[in-house]
Length: 198
Image: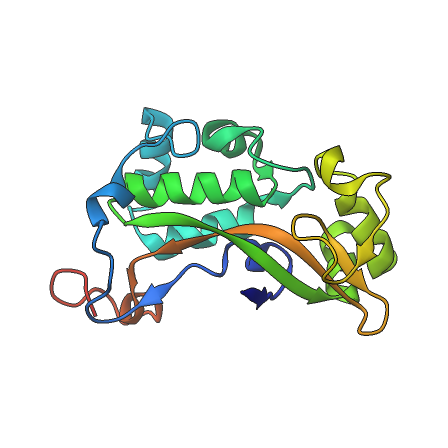
């Protein structure tokens, strides 16, 4: 499945699922545990979640609004270093967000898939002048076995790397985002209802 994405850092994390009513989170306990090195529930992470009131909306907005996006491939910093330097790629930012959610007792998990965006949006993410430049920039951050010489492949020709359509002027790439069980009414500002479920 290829998902369209929104704005810069918002789309890195905005795929966070906001759910109402009963959900299919059959493995809720598993989505609350530490899974080093991706999910860390250290005293530093727990303290940050507590400082944000263990409120999933405040946690999400903290990561979305207070962190800078950096383009590189894979989990390199981990949640604690990402928190300290206030910057990371989508993998590190997602690891921080999942860690903070779980520290606040909010079930959360990683999702990985392909996203697609217009050239202009790809350029805005990377600071490039055009989508083709953004595509090339991202290709150079991937494992060399994926991208060869670092140039962009035609859209749909690479199951792993960044691709770009010269006809539709759209870029596709692998991406990671977060799903979390958050009461929809809570996120809309209504407040927790009952035991935190909408």
